[in-house]
Image (cartoon, rainbow over the protein chains, first blue to last red):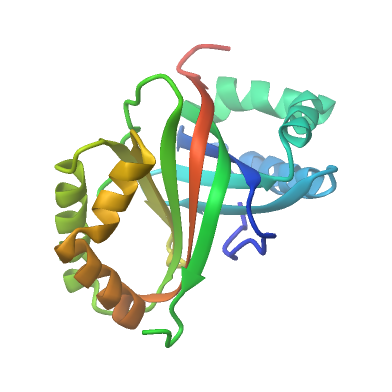
Length: 115
Length: 115
């Protein structure tokens, strides 16, 4: 995962897929390569809006991808290479994960001297 | 932030507040203390369902809190001590942050030998 940047998103409504996961140990190079590949593939999908991701030293991570519509999420879910990567994730990379699909209703940001 | 655990949530629909932030450097002890205090306060609010949080070594983090209703989110937002902590966050702790409030429509999980 790179994803150290904030996603630039349009005004709501749009959709979010919140993916929380606990990594298993090991296999880091293969995982990093597959993660980068999935981020690049996702970014090329119709309706993709952006992604943000963080993972702590304890291996617990949250990745939120943003999409223009439910159809865009379904399209990415059916993507053949993504489907294979999800199967590998279940088997090799994640001890556990949770997915929540949500409709973003409002959004705001701040800081950088905004106090 | 502790938050290395998955939140145990009811069946959707419910609401999520996705808080993405880039930490400024320094002030870690005060930040950790305030974070723990806010997590404890949030957990005592009506309509609180759970929280998940991850922050990488680069200081970029995502915290997702889950709530039973929009009213529960508004109640927590108006909480006096939380309001003060948000002001301190804007001023001292975060270089930048983004908040997205979303309605979770569906959810699923897996792994741990589920392949």
